[in-house]
Length: 397
Image 1 (cartoon, rainbow, N blue to C red):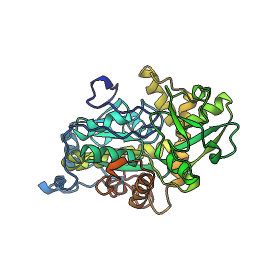
Image 2 (tube, rainbow, N blue to C red; image 1 turned 90 degrees about the vertical axis):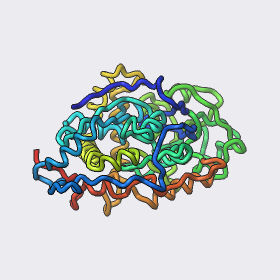
Image 3 (spheres, rainbow, N blue to C red; image 1 turned 60 degrees about the vertical axis):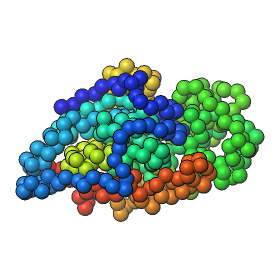
Image 4 (cartoon, helix red, strand yellow; image 1 turned 45 degrees about the horizontal axis):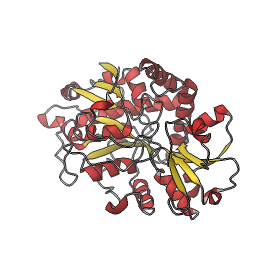
């Protein structure tokens, strides 16, 4: 059964600093919550549905979906997925929307409930298994929340292998060094990848430049604020809005400075992963098929998202042009940064460790230090839904 609903954020047990689309433009250090979770050091033993003697539990391309696997997936009950920012056409959201719209979850005997929510609000809900899947803005954001709150969250897909953040500098500044002594506008706080990029040219927040908290998410309005020199934002959002409005700017990309990052994560909790391994794998199987469709036809994917945005009242004033730009940009970044020897969405342990280490070097994680990387992602689950040719293994209809 396919359902989409708006999620009521007022009932959430945790309030975090808000940021922008598809997760967060600016990462916040998550506050502590008492949400129950399993320990990273002692995860529960997964229950394999094939242990009961049923044969043929594996999904085989072009063959009927196994009855035993269907039964195991139905036993998971309603699987809740919470978006990271409305129904935005962005990585780790749009593929689920496409999969839902095309009935891919239904074909795998999954009852998935898709709800519009906000990235930082979802971590405690997934940690407590009140929701089973959600979207995260970056691995650093996910790992930090898990560490601070002793929450056993597991990233299953990491789609973007580069930071999604960029710094848009107003006209009149020749380079990053010229930002010394100025004020940079931020939403929440300065994104870690931007902090590292500025540190590379000798600029440290609070010493060499200041930051000013901005209201809302409109970059055109932000550029009109007097006294600020630059504004950070997502490559897939703010630059498009500024271009459409004819606002001049220079974009600085942390990737051009060799700074690691990630975006577009789908994660779950270890309890659900252990108790319902086939449902977890098949949720990701459907999502990865939705992702392949979305990359192949960005306009169709954006249109699916826009229909849901409008059906939800469009509280964030998202536009069709903005959503098409958002997903076209995300899709290009995902495709361009996925090496030929792996598949889209498969986590890269070395890259995730490098991301955390780079952010720790500029003090992003505070006195507690960098969060553990080990145990915060599954390198094999998404890899297992792909055939050798890179297609998603899918049963006969």
